[in-house]
Image (cartoon, rainbow, N blue to C red):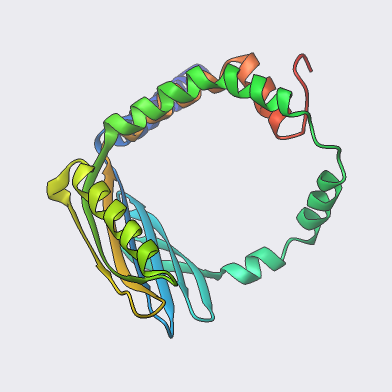
Length: 226
């Protein structure tokens, strides 16, 4: 009886794990950002969703809110300023960490060299899974120097036509030479089509002892060989 129950539990766990892996492979992660910058106000919204669950950050004048979403509707709403102010213990730990002497630059360079092959594989998997759907921008720019305004406008125009895929990008900048101004809107939509393919190299890297040691080292919580 106990063996049958244990077997049934193992089967259920295996089915759940397989279903989760299949969902991570088939269900994309969607990222959407909308920002609006005006002289009188600035607003921004960033949403990350996977299937029916997601999170949204809303920032406007006097408002900084985190929403946990279910089927696109907020089920939990928290004020980001309250969250940041509600952890005195964490602040105390941060102060203690700040008192620690900084590690030599050489240590960070060595750690970066050791971690770079793993980061390269993770970045390659991320780029392969990334699909840019929309990048739209409409900005008005004016700097103190008309010449500087012209230079920035020229660079932005060149970069816009060099970006790929061009059909997904609609970026317009209007230069203003008689006053200082920066206003406009930005809309970004993209999908990560195969989240599982990104998690695989991440997990492979974290399973290696040397990687974990290097991560502890750069975070100040340990040293190589610890």
